[in-house]
Length: 400
Figure 1 (cartoon, one colour):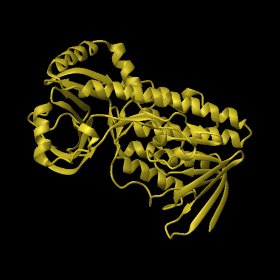
Figure 2 (spheres, one colour):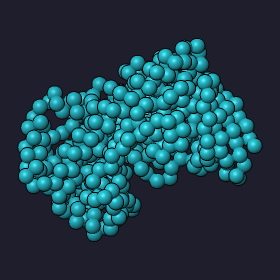
Figure 3 (spheres, one colour):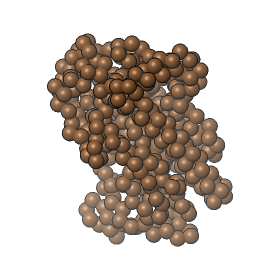
Figure 4 (tube, rainbow, N blue to C red):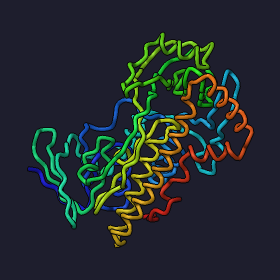
């Protein structure tokens, strides 16, 4: 058996776990980092990095490289029946990063993983956690590695950043009530001919459902298309002719799909764990909250969780009262997660209504709201995630 003893054990190496590890490494706090996968994701799940996450990455010295790898989009444009109903001015948000950064999640995770490896803290890959034993003075985490060899980690504090199907969360006895929408999304990465302006991300709510268009490099785009999901059944990935039909009926008239690079069907859930931890353990990222990708705020919120977790645990390592610090983290991040889940749920229900009468009312409401600058700025600020950064929610401040 391989045995490890450390101050902190992190389980999971998605964005939340990687950011936690990078923060701890920067602040000189010992930890062991376990992940059941081989390394960063290869496929592009998320695409949007908002200002609130870029501010965190900037604190860690990572923002500049990621910003250089993506497209900068200063606003969302909501279009109904070929006419602009509302522009959401991200460029007016008070932040060093007044735009939406469109960059594949695979690129983001690869950068985080590369930096963590460079400072000598690469996660222990293909380490599958089987059991977690908690006591008053810490945790024992046990499992097997890629070769089937048992391992044991003893740590005073535990971070569960191991995703929606977390092992840590149920081991702590924390409930995670969730709801599955009866609307699902089709995701398609395509090459378009005669596409719209790539300086904007385009939202087309229609009586047929939602079409979201986000520019990638060149003339490539990520399309998100809402479809019914009765009984919570995952939809089949669309074919090129199907994607073209969705474009034609939902606001992409005159745009031609030249090539379909990747397609997927995605079920949508929303929910928040009853607590962001227990005892000497905390949760971060998808282990604690899940919501629709409307607004592209999932990975961003997880990055903020991870940085707050690192700052909190580093403060404890430097002498702060553990019970008080951990309670503060749980309260801050639970409040942030509930705000995000409630906001994305409202967006989801607004843009996916497909009843003809309701669509008319929605179109009139969007047009009216689009004439209110203060409302557009307020929506832009909520989407940008800047109000939920650790620096603005009361996390410990540790510069070195």
